[in-house]
Length: 110
Image (cartoon, rainbow, N blue to C red):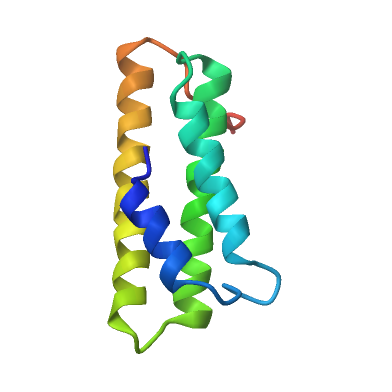
């Protein structure tokens, strides 16, 4: 689960648009979607959606660092901590899928 501390930090510090077509609301909505889904019973569909949500959050953070990196170290720290937490969540989702013997393959085999 993405922590309340990080969510609150985003609400307080990252208020400007993340990029031209991306607002912090998009980022917060993706985090909320992930956190809500994480509370549900694991299933192949849920695992797939969780991975998509985490990927989306990760892409938002990368875009922010590319376009809006700040001289404000508090903002940078919040986004770095979010990225770190998303990467740990990725590992947890995969670990839970493997331990539950849920197929997590998302794409097509070549």
